[in-house]
Image 1 (cartoon, rainbow, N blue to C red):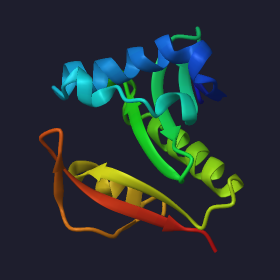
Image 2 (image 1 turned 90 degrees about the vertical axis):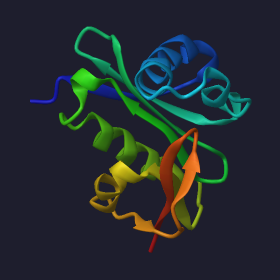
Image 3 (image 1 turned 180 degrees about the vertical axis):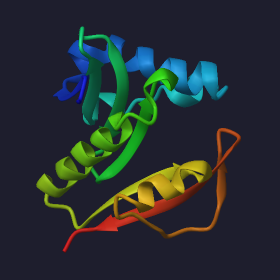
Image 4 (image 1 turned 90 degrees about the horizontal axis):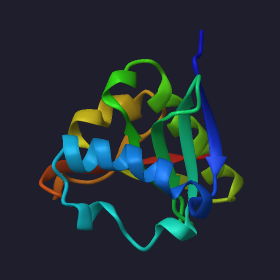
Length: 142
């Protein structure tokens, strides 16, 4: 039974909920500097918010205008329950509807298998971002 909901939301009206999850996952848990987590691209992105059965925010993702998926974050207590997968599937669908040839993301190295199961292929060498090893991955649309 799915006890969460994924909605496409507007940054201006949902930034507090989106930021709450991103801050907890990236800044508190992963020790990403706050100035690295927050950027000027948020207002131009399509955002997805996962909420629990009482409407509390539990996950986020965003899609940049160029089809880059990012800021995929799920609160620790909700991991392994399908929230991340649902956020990425919604993001892939969004990129496809933009008419772009592929969805691209920079995956933390520990998450590459998760993205491979959703059809992404590694397309770069390993690189460091915010002190965390990453690779670029791509899902081409047929």
